[in-house]
Image 1: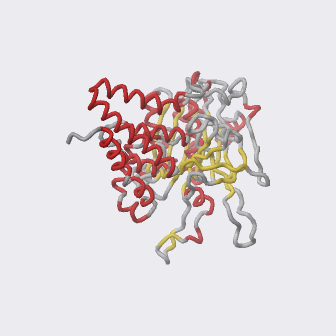
Image 2: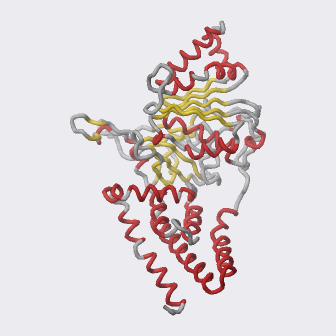
Length: 447
């Protein structure tokens, strides 16, 4: 058309941005979300690389994602990704605008100066957005004890019910598929580095409001922390929770009864970026990792959101550059029980660790609605663990630590399995369990 660049570039930027502003607001409508669910699902897969990190890193990631002119990485997909990650609207808009401008500049540079011009513009975008990722500490070693495995300084009950800490939500994201039984969310909370914790501990959350029966504040609910002490952004300023929305299906109403829903879980799953969360803790020492011997095997058994502490363990041992991970030579074996494949939690993270550390990380799933146990019934977590009963028994005899987190209903089956193995080996079951407990190899946190 022969139009000057000074006309074309602003027109292209405005043309890309014009529908983005209403889109970000329209996506808040539940009906529209359902209608657009196939598109949103595709957008979620494409934008998964944006990650659950700090707002600053999300801004830089989104700007780079939108700014590189490749198929499927434009403003529309970026806007949907920003919505799915729960980014504040103003932050998302400024990031998308930066990305759209960058894409226009890169294409213009290619048009005017060929490949060299495009590469120069791309390098400028990388420098501009990359500084957020290359600033600060590269190693995760600034929150360690001395030596790193010494548990004498584990923080406990820094904040109590009468004087809780106020954290701010960074993001709240649904992390299960459409066919999952219920909704589970991953919630990242900013604590400004003022609320240190260790892997395996819990935070208390006090939902806002008062109880109907007596007008007193709601009691604190404990949630296992689902990140390492460094947080998902590895700055030491955040922590994450894995929360399933508790609902009650009323057969008479043929719908969820709002009067019987879980007060705290619904509050957390409904939070938006910037919302305050009143928190206590950190609580508990029962689920800590013993790290003095780097050859220790860890057997981790979870149902549903009981996966939370193990995510912290696995990130510390394999994902982050920690002193414990640098020397770890044992095997971490994760068992997770959920209803179906859509209900799997953090599967992409586990698969990546499994690929990178095949000798040190094992993974087994029990999918009750998709798999059968050896008796032809539904495959529950205790059935999957039983498949490896002899191997697990031998590991425990050789010093392995076993962890249980999730629904207490799994424990009788697990105990019966171990009892059967003990009988077959002529070992007294009660003495065997007492021995594990006395050596602190037996860790239980069930509800």
